[in-house]
Image (tube, rainbow, N blue to C red; front, side, top):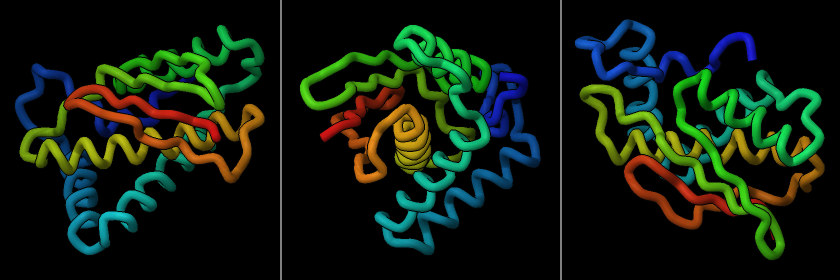
Length: 154
């Protein structure tokens, strides 16, 4: 990975004010949730996630260890946490932890819903490119403030 894609969302705790790109992105997120139905907003942010995944494919990763390492390298570089993968009956369990906190002034719940939808879109695309079916979608099993558990499979 040569450049972190999610950098506009990366906020160091020492920052005292929002930089213009982050401020603009926060307003765009708020506006999307205000003007769209929840399902439409989620679909929009999933599509953004898929676009990010297309821009940052997992590369030549072939083994499970290489795939896991490529995903975590991307998350570490972008400041969006880390992922744990576990094979489960009928699919793959994905535990994404250490999500970045909401930018200052943004509603925590809205931020969390946005981040979860973006992540789901990224995992849909990445795992689809590794041999998954286009009909399989990443589903949310549960979440907390800083983590989300997904399932990818039948």
